[in-house]
Image (cartoon, rainbow, N blue to C red; front, side):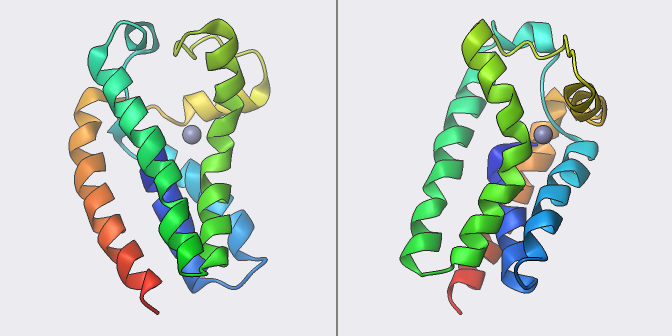
Length: 147
Ligand SMILES: [Zn+2]
């Protein structure tokens, strides 16, 4: 699942649940979303796919940009829970930087093996689930920032 959708779901959890309960629920939401059908390419295709790089780059900056309206409107629980919901994917960042590759198929520890395994419905057509979901979640997120 793209980081943008993880962050938005986490932020909305931070809106409706009290702290500190919202934080572990936001982290758990990450794995629920990863188990649903979502966008992804076979690992070996990622390094050569222009579409993957575009989606990754846009997603990275769009997700990071969500911090601005949450902080500017003082919705710090939404901000913290949005970050918490994205955190489980940070385990991949070190590998991507170290190996200069998005091939995450060779997993050595129980966490990355399990995290990769639950994403069995990761498919290229998943973008057509993620984009409408992103639009819907963003509208709800903007509404949640209003009060
Ligand atoms: Zn994940």
